[in-house]
Amino acid sequence: MASASSSSAKNLFSDSKRRLADRVMVNVHNSASVARQIVRGSKSNEILMQAAKNFAQAEASMDNSAQNLKKMQLIRQQMGYQVDAIEQGTEKLDIIKEQVCSMER
Image 1: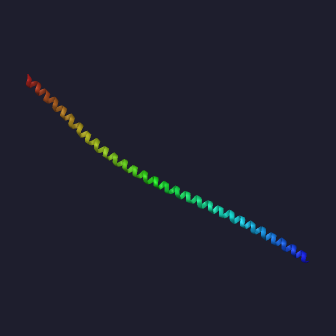
Image 2: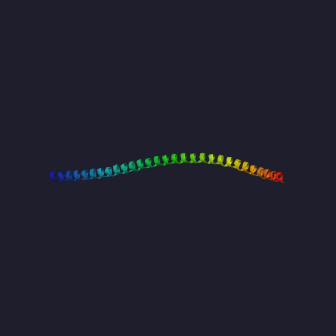
Image 3: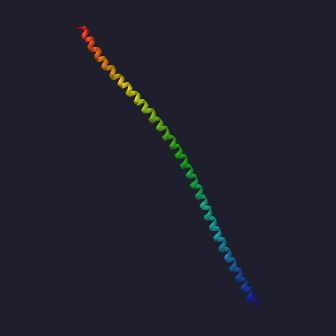
């Protein structure tokens, strides 16, 4: 009877040992899975921060471009005024030229 109980105890011990090893293996796999998720999460945070920086830079560039466009519109308007003034000057020159020609006769 002693041998039956010792073999039963051995079986129970080996079964407990096997289940413990299985649980340890499952916990190791779960820990690895958690570690992978943390690494993925940290990379996504870095990517998100880089995207926010790029967006801020793009926003600054767009603002600068909009200001440049406004300046260009003002310059175009001023050039239009200058063209009008030149046209008026050439019309007056034509009139003066005709008057000079008539005075020479």
